[in-house]
Image (cartoon, rainbow, N blue to C red; front, side, top):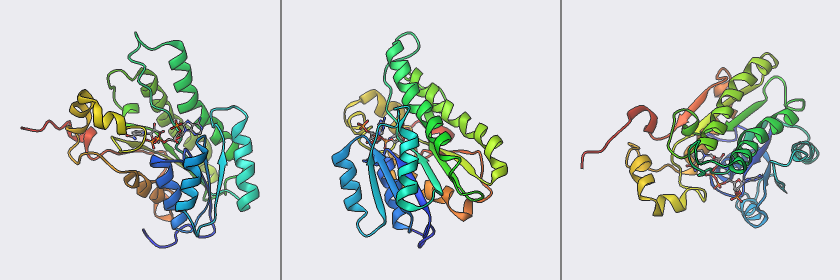
Length: 256
Ligand code: NAP
């Protein structure tokens, strides 16, 4: 950690009941931010709040894919913390509905709605209230939004949408002094991936063995999200930063 970089600042973190979202919420709170942590999983969200004991930490159970939810989430943050400086659009669902020939309309619609449309709606609701200049939006995309990967048509299209929405938003919001950046994680050990990491031999071969630094931790993403919210990243804007232990860069194949 780098001291209390976010003292006096207010943040919303979606998908904060576990994994990357929990790590981001705890990191920002640990560095002094007032945080509104949002998720659909009430019990685990309460656990996150317990872990943030001593911080100015509020929780809200909400489905961010519900079209009416984002306005309510932003209002709640403003009421609880008196302003809004940072939005971490993290909540997402995994999509394993196959390639284009296999993916059903239902899978496609659900994954696009959750993984990219909710990011658009959360951002739309937050933008009028974000501090200007100085507001920060960090979106969680994926390495699968940057290169093709088998069996992930809807997920990959949604995450590529998040990456491009990030660049697009900079064109619109940059002049107001708002930074919008995205992180594209590689394989990170979270509740979303645990089962695959433990039981999917093909995924281990394609993703994990091929990652020079092996499986990452939620804190590996939270540290970069905090950097992107910090003054050190004042001039970083519209970037999609892969945080993947070298998977994209190396196309590594171990000799064994
Ligand atoms: P996670 O462990 O499943 O955590 C995501 C949280 O968001 C869960 O608590 C989830 O609840 C919640 N959520 C899902 N839909 C929601 C909704 N409609 N409204 C509110 N909350 C909702 O996942 P993670 O691995 O930390 O992933 C976080 C983000 O990173 C996602 O956008 C994911 O696509 C991205 N990512 C992850 C990896 C990785 O390797 N872990 C790699 C690349 C990108 P449920 O559990 O009930 O769904």
